[in-house]
Image 1: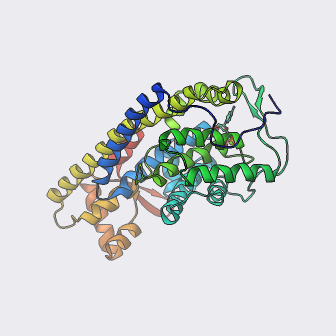
Image 2: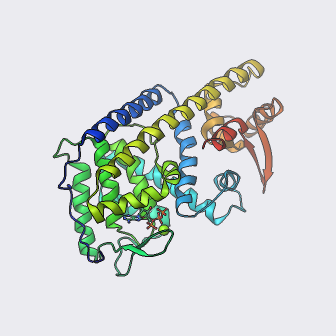
Image 3: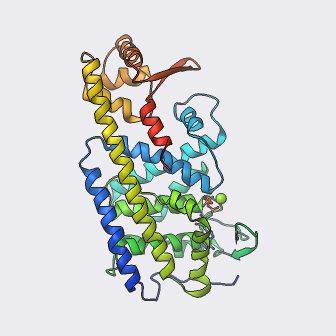
Length: 356
Ligand SMILES: Nc1ncnc2c1ncn2[C@@H]1O[C@H](COP(=O)(O)OP(=O)(O)OP(=O)(O)O)[C@@H](O)[C@H]1O
Ligand SMILES: [Mg+2]
């Protein structure tokens, strides 16, 4: 088992089995429905940010970096006292944004981009593994299940094979099936000392964006993987041990369906809340209402005087008056952290927190 040599892509098996095609239709339908809805929303940044907070938290939790929303809130509002874990979660979120912007800009997902993403997650420039000795263990028993390829050159050639598989569609295999293959292959190459799981989960979303299945980076498998964790590890290993691809592909396809459905629900809820609050502010505080103000209030789940000042090009005094008025009417709650007053959009915050 330990001298297993990871084959190059594509896998030499029938991928489009009857069961796979059936599930594929469901997954594509759910994803397309989400995309359709998200496309109609004016300020996508609001949605993306809301979804990213939970994804960053969940994906980091798989790696045992456990934080609470409150802790994250502190890290994000740049106040001191945020835990190390919260800072790591912030790095993950930055890495997604950066990856997303790179993919949008270049229309490709390359090995160098993947190295950059992993560097942002880990906040170091170690790059590809150079030393031997990395092994994957069974989470529960600690026993070694797989030794990934060793030697930078070999790893690089596997990555360039993967890069080609990602960017050049020589076959007409559905992108969602390819997604599952890419994820397996990337995790099996395991090119880095650490952060392979998180980097692989970011590659998943970037691939969906690259292939035009989504415009905004809003569908993630992390919470699905948490809910079906032992299956996740077992199925990855089964491909290697017994060439069992179908179960793995189905696992990923079901994840895409489930997460698309859940994300659509959340996105709808957020959108409704934006509209509801917008209407209420218009009624109660007509003098300060503007669309831009609403956008700023939902941009993150907190805001500061300086953000409103800059965002609306008004004086600091006016910005401060706006926030005080919003707080008096119960739209925001504020707290003085360090020297700064931070205003929280509690409705948005509670909604994000309540997401499973
Ligand atoms: N048997 C296996 N075959 C292939 N890949 C595996 C196997 N077992 C685990 N993995 C992958 O390795 C990842 C863990 O690698 P690593 O610790 O480098 O990543 P991480 O981001 O630090 O951790 P995590 O994924 O736990 O958050 C898992 O998420 C999984 O994708
Ligand atoms: Mg790790």
